[in-house]
Each structure stands twice: as structure tokens, then as C-alpha cells.
Length: 120
Image (cartoon, rainbow, N blue to C red; front, side, top):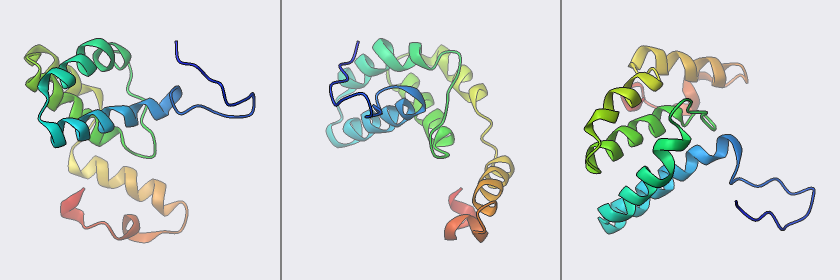
């Protein structure tokens, strides 16, 4: 259990959809340190279980998070999980582009905020 000690009106980012960001944070730590043991602890002890049935994205990060979970599975010796992460979130370029256009476009922002198509 995580402590929530900042009062009743404070909303913790440790719970809910924001937890998907923790995957990206752990991946960044791995990229800086090369510490596969750290990554394995994160993947086996938390992420694989937490996101086993659903990956709730946060601010359109579900595409990147699914990609990182797939990489984590490979690096930590869980090749059998790769197909699971590949199916979890649809990541073909056409679908990703549509999702960004719908969400950015609803707020009057064209071209996904200036993101080049080859970077989606």
C-alpha cells in the first residue's frame, strides 16, 4: 500500500491511469543505467501483473507504454509475454494517427500539435 499523506484534497499519481507513466520512468532509468536486474524487478514484481488485463493509458501514452512493456518482456526473459503486449494496444500507424487526430482535433489543433507523420 502506498501512503497518501498530503491531505484529503490531494490526488495521488500513484493510482489510476497515471501508473502507466511509471513504465516509462522505469524504462528511462534502465536506459541510463543498463540495470537489467532493476528492470526485471519492475517488470516481474509490478508491471506484468498490474497491466495483465488492461492498459489504461494516460495522455495518449498507451502506444509507447505497450511498446516499452514488449521491450521489457524481451529483455527480462519473458518472450512468451511479447505477443500479449502486442495484442493489448493496437499500434499500427494508421490507427495511431487517427487516435491523435481525433483527440487533438477535437480541441482545434491540426496535425497532432506539429508531430511529423513518420514519428507517430
